[in-house]
Length: 66
Ligand code: FES
Image (cartoon, rainbow, N blue to C red):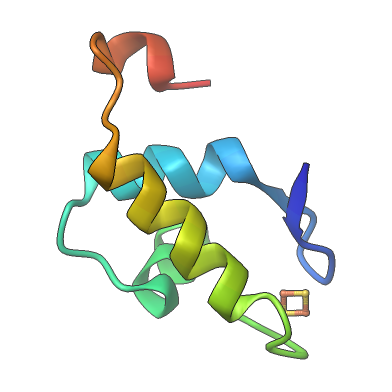
């Protein structure tokens, strides 16, 4: 499912950043993904996706990387 329609970024991409960069903010996640927020309507959702990934990390993080 897309998180950010403006940049065509999906949940897996934000989850991967959340796991690989445990201290990254949503804004930093965009930078890591070489994008920048546009309309900003996705920021809260992106933050929830990243928090959920960190709260429930995969047993095998390698499997998490798309
Ligand atoms: S939907 Fe993410 S910046 Fe617009």
